[in-house]
Length: 546
Image 1: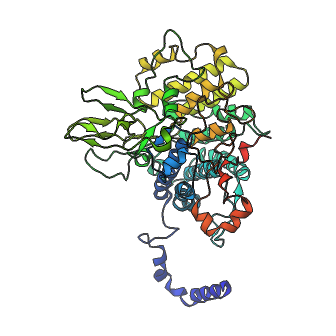
Image 2: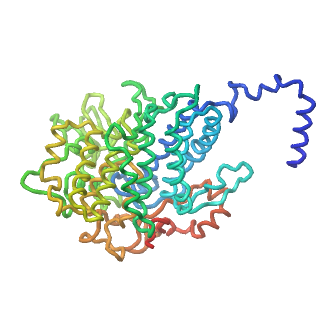
Image 3: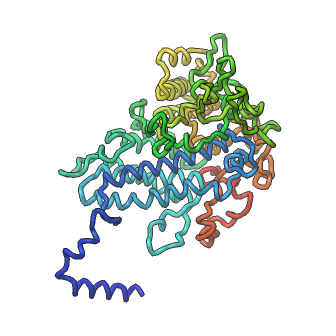
């Protein structure tokens, strides 16, 4: 059939050779056409759709890591995620946002940019390709890479995370080379399409190095783990708030109900979302071995990260965190409503304040929301704070306790700066006994729990927990003494079909329905157990000790 089509096409070209202008309609800029959009037109939706998928993966992940909770609803996706259960439906959106809305546009943008000498767009395209495939490999463990954009293959083969890492790390190096080039005369400036860094090429270069440091830091269980390579990447990665890659969302107006440009965490965290006791405990240093002393001070981020509600007398109270190790989660917390006529809540579980900001018609504040989930909040895609915590971990592993302490404190400082906290207040907190002051007393738990806070709503939070084995001993059993993430326990309502043993922990997301329904043969080859309940507790490549 292909030969016949080619012959017809050749004949048509010969017969209509004199009608080139008539055929130009195929390149009508007002018609949908893969070759028409310019790089500066393709890039904004690529960045927006990537952020949608990436931050949506984060929302899902932090229900698994028990940063967030959900009101009881036996079949609600987010409630199931707190049970460590991800069904195919829960896995769908990050996959679709990447493959359908983002990845397919990257190579066409690069191809168009090559013809224009728009090297900066080529560099950004390679970064986005590496980033997208990299975080999805961390999320699912396997995914199509080599064959995903071959139009002749409708059931592409799956590639393992190991292979994908082998591809994306060189891509980041290639991106830096492109970004360092001088663009051709007349090529579109990066600023025309760049909604992340406003056309700041140096920030994109730093992002490439930051991603390299991030991906390399995931490999601590592998023989190829290279601390020197991570430190080398960190030296060129973001060092400050200004060099971080942060997506500013738009609160369109005080009265509009539209969420088209609003923060993903506003859209993704509904009135059913709550914060956990673990998250509150981490912020307030209520965990085993937390720093404490005579000059303790409440973390200035507490009121920004934990929703508060107004009592009838006008005072503000912080939400209680949902305790996943208690019986509360077996049938709660319960949803509640508020009555303006009686000025009361319908259920005592209103002590678990909803995450989404809300004000009643009579002016009573039902929830302040959080810094991350207001309509006009920021998406912290890759920050210097994260880089400092990666450095702190490396320095700690190398026994460089003084440098580890400095990086740990800088990570806290930069995260607070990004959140807009007053400098004097930041430094007061950093000098208090609520922060480790003695380098010899610093532990990996101190570093990683602060990184957990700085990576709120990020899929990286779950990556770190997996590669550092949650809060377990060498046998995989929960251990307050030796575990890193103190207090992170198997939930009381754990999905026992997927986690039958005490040593079973959440290691990957289930495969999306698209692949299960339409590509099951290839899926079976790559993951023979994909349809078993226990598949989601199988470690992905970098989560297996060499």
